[in-house]
Length: 139
Ligand SMILES: [Zn+2]
Image (cartoon, rainbow, N blue to C red):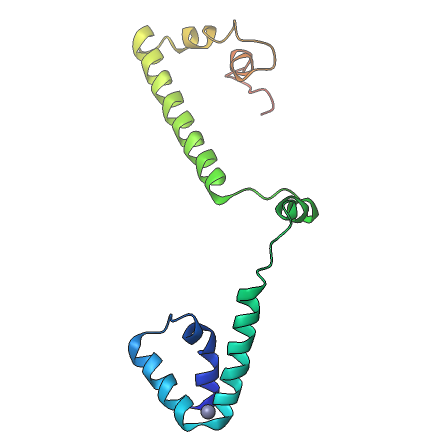
């Protein structure tokens, strides 16, 4: 193990996070290499200073960081929830269409559209009720 590799493990070595075989290699290198031993002692000193003076983040740090982010960041699971709700909506809509078609029988599709005539203005139901099957509505 060369000096550069050993020094890249110092943080993990100090935290006792290295696998036993690597930890052993670092220990043996430190015993044999004065330059790395000096560097390691500097790391140890820094670790002791950091442990003695824990730095606390201000309580409003996360709010201030979020304020400065461009646009609004949404967690990944919100995108997943949106996609899942769209899929459920499409599935339920399809099921509703099949149910209505079965209720009124084949060839009576016009009756299905009347279901939406009572829908509130500007709703999807109102759009469907006003849809011109022959010419379309410019949609
Ligand atoms: Zn070395």
